[in-house]
Length: 307
Image (tube, rainbow, N blue to C red; front, side, top):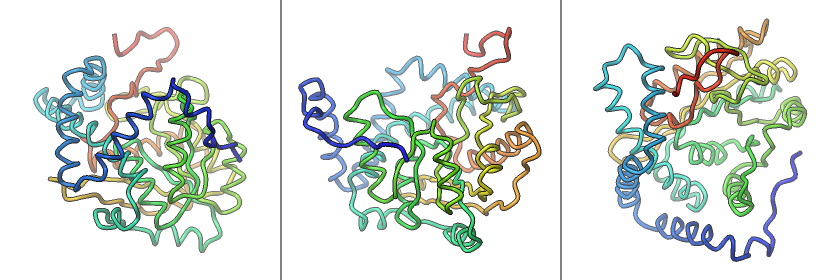
């Protein structure tokens, strides 16, 4: 298992004081009534859209590539709502890390837990497909409150944030594992554990194949789903953390388990997985992390889609 970051006196060094200030401010905000937190998140999102010009360009380009059938006006509406979701996502990270269980239960509904129980009764591991919605931190907390699992993560370059995100995510889950520790993931799945895994981003050319994703015919897609499912025998269960409209709270939707995913070829598995991810994103497209350059990796010799 991955050696998880631990708190140490080194995290009190002056170079982390700015980070501590931001963490403290976020904690204080989470003490406010939720309707106030919601409005602050919306305002922060509108502010982010004004200042994060590069991310606005990336988001707009992603929407053009993913939804060529939509009009420019429709895509701009999604972009506007998406940046509201960016601001809310920061607030939801604080909620996930700092709220007590009773308060999360008050504002969050979970459905489909029986899908996880069915896999566990079959003595199978669960490869939980946790797509990069902007509320993913809260989604992980909501899931862990019902059926604790193991999260896959990328260690943060900031040692304080690395410790804090691990501490926050483990408030309701068992442990964390480095995304590079493939053997550790397979071992845990064979032992019947739940592994939270996100195969929806562009992780570069290594370990990827080019298959369709939304409006892009050649989208670099990880072969990790194929490897993990084939070598562990785990069932695949997608989940969608979705924000309810108008500040009414949240819902976590656990979708039906797939006990026999297509595992003939890495390309076939990746295409099948992308089709499921598309369906999940369409359940709340404005809440997805479109700021990420999802289509940055190209076949050798082809120009960038972002220039």
